[in-house]
Figure (cartoon, rainbow, N blue to C red):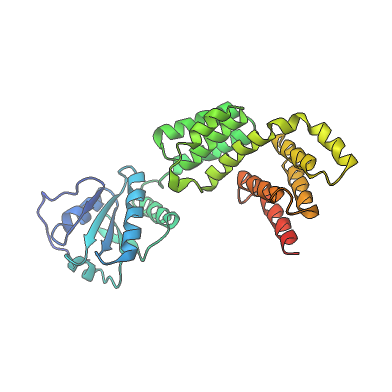
Length: 307
């Protein structure tokens, strides 16, 4: 057992995120970890990776809603505990449960791996993974939206946002619900709530693509038959084929839309400033990076580009 020594009983941990020292470690970390898991972040002022890691740890701990605590220890001023734990480099992170270190890592990790680490610590401490209920709710809402049960999906997304106002997947999903219901104004208002640093999130790009597709295809749907007739007369009528692709996408014939756009690109890749390629990229963003149509469409487009 590590020899941390005894500390005064009045130095209890304050809040979920706090600074700890060698003198307060026993109370703030060891004793606190008997109540809930405590993550210890060993850092130093001159450590660049520490400046990247610590804010991400703080976000993840905040998202846990009090189920876990974060103690930050500056090894320049308080090196004793780091020495006892044989810290070789920083940033170094240790997780304590029931008074003992149970897991840890060194170096900066991406947010996804930090979440996995915290989920594992919570489970080891007898708790549930952060966001487990939200993940299940998101999956249920996505299934409802896919099945066309728009009202149910929208209610689920809205309920999630009441608890987690910055849940990006719920914001994107709610925007897609409004788009599917034809309420593009509310879809845009929902997307306007997305922070600048989350604009490139796949869920937001998908929702934004759905809105743009609905805007662009509104007039094309009415002229679908006319565009097909125009193509029978002239297969190189790229505008007619482009409008037909938008209409097909709007009626959920996603494969047909991709086929028409790829055909335009095959015939004249520079037409209208590569409009076919640009629209294909929008569709891929809308469908999502793992959709089979996205994967096959990207492969075929790449094959044409490099042929």
